[in-house]
Length: 293
Image 1: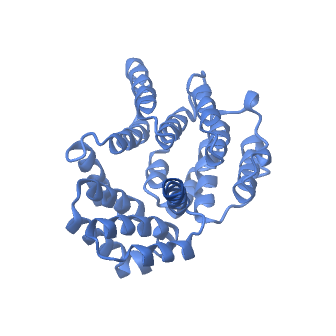
Image 2: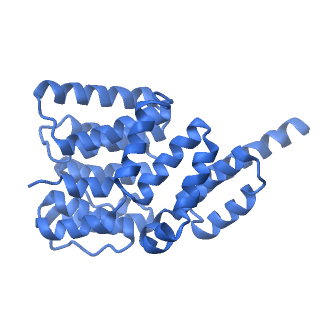
Image 3: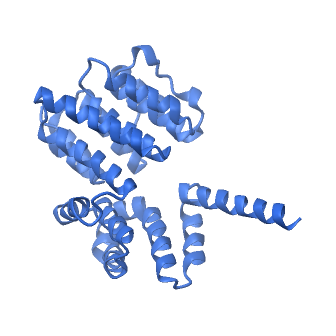
């Protein structure tokens, strides 16, 4: 079965189209994995209890996302498939246990099971970068790519995920920022008129200090086509746009940061940006108290 279009739509944030593509393809573990994840992203998850072990695992993972209690994830590591390891590792990463999450990813990557291995690689890279360990992310990526290249097993859907993982590493480490990595994000944004694709290009422009180009993308995303005709994506990705508008506001020094933060807090009070900003402010307050006493 050819999953390229499903994965292409998923990784460009077009989750509704993923569900349409899967209706045509039929059911197996891969289509269930991307169907359930797309439903979760859209906030429209439907129970998959009748879809075997992976379906039950998704039900427990969805329960975890609501409770944030790791014990709600019923997946057993010893008998888990690679797709189940993605869910279990994701849950551990969400609660901040990056070490366990990384170990779970590595277990699947080193296994003989090929299905789900690329998804584990991408997650392992993301977790390493979240944990501010880009060297480990690069080593994981290089080892995997070298092994797959030696085996001559790269397909178009393999390359799609591998290229995305590489772009994350380059973005984090500021490598090829003005060349290949920028062209990668630019090409995707031209090929796919999705919020996710435009936000990645916006991030790249901000990284390079291209304020005019960044402002232009903000205007595009706030246009009727993106904000009204793509309302489902707009509702999903607007918090990320606000975070990038905060960054742009800081770079432009236009005095809009606090109003944008207030809007973000109203829209997504649990957003990671707000939590990190609160930690920084608390740390600063501690230092002020310490050195003024």
